[in-house]
Image (cartoon, rainbow, N blue to C red):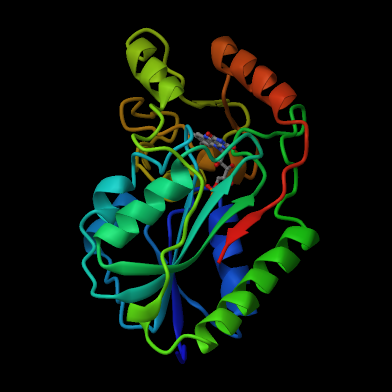
Length: 275
Ligand SMILES: Cc1cc2nc3c(=O)[nH]c(=O)nc-3n(C[C@H](O)[C@H](O)[C@H](O)COP(=O)(O)O)c2cc1C
């Protein structure tokens, strides 16, 4: 099978998933991959998603061991026929649990044919200088693995006559998928606890970048200290992108949970690929 063109469909609030997708595409010999970024709600609503390329990389982060709830309804609207796809999840060095299987299954049900799957590791969205979790990953080693994965996918596809001859890929995971327990707990307590980043008005310059990068469009662009807690998906895009360090999570319960997470995520995990 000849693959001449590749596009990457990604949801990536803090940018690591997008970067892994780009590296895989580079490894496939494609320096200029077309990125179909579906991170923001308005982009999903108004964006033109063109699946005419020969192969699509579908990449999402892992949230609570699953494909992020935010993106699942959009993924379930896609409709293609026998389109080769590389299925990728990116996680913050805890576990990817059932997310890879879930993304594989959703893609298959929408008409994609998974030709390869991978679980990659990146800096955790909740990592910060005081509580580093997989800090600065993907690192050069991860980039190398992602590129090698891309070139191995091309090697594999060269040996296959047509997409109908593709053998099913088996990936780890359970069905029914794991309940996203922490998400359910957060939804339960959100009446009383905001679990939403707050704005230090002494540091904030009202530059508006946080509102621009918020995937859920939960931050008021006229007054960025106003955040709709019912829309916020706690992705930390606003915190990680704030140039003056004005956005912070101050809730002590949330920060205790990050402390515990840091302890269980100490051991470095490596990318896993399935071809
Ligand atoms: C709400 C939320 C839930 C997460 N759940 C997990 C998880 O279950 N396991 C894990 O290892 N990392 C988890 N992470 C970390 C992200 O998967 C990881 O940081 C990923 O690289 C973020 O991708 P992005 O940079 O494209 O936004 C979670 C992050 C967020 C914001």
